[in-house]
Length: 324
Image 1 (cartoon, rainbow, N blue to C red):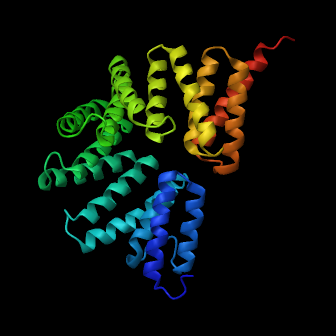
Image 2: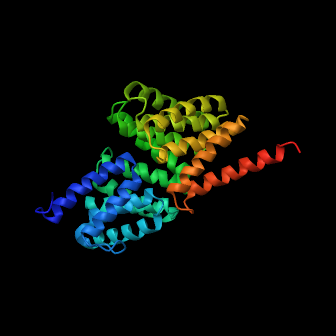
């Protein structure tokens, strides 16, 4: 079908399909696609070819999603090095590649490196872009997330409050970017011990999304999931379970068995059910999660090991309380 077309055109079309798979979180299919692209272009999967940077960037982002973060960092460090040698400090493509490398650093638990790199990106954008420019706000948003992971929670809250304030002044109350930053700020509030503020803000976000998005929209479900977590942190465990059961029910109807978002919600629900002493239900759910994650994730993947540890804990507790 594409035999007469040049490789650049064919690859461009395939990459567009790849970004769609990324948005759908069909990580396994995208992984196969990028492997086939590498073979088609006779590229080395470990050494970046400067002629095909976008191929390597998408491959690296997929590797992060698949838990292969070390390889992702290896590729993105090369991409950034090439960009730094070929374009100016404030060139959008250079800043974008540094941004992606920082995200990979965070996923690879190199949080200090992520913070350092994002601080550089934000510093340049603050000098070259207006305070309400989407790229500048996006980088500040991501830096705040890295601060939170690096336990610089107060810095995360302060920066996110600035971002949210600007977005509230410039974007409609149902704009996805505004809601995303409010969602993230709520998470920072929770980490900073401001649980009531987190609950209040997420309830606002969820209310707007329930009015504007379908009940199976990923963004709506993500905020409901986050609200369930802050409910539990606030001692509202019954409300947390009720909301999370709704989220899980919808995801079980709309997402594949091995979809990461579905599994994350099921895992969380199992721990909440256990907290409410619904132990049989909790054990059934966590067993299912472990079974699926063992099929699709490496044995060292944090999500898989976490679920396996919870399963062992549940079994141990149940065995200890059984009558002799």
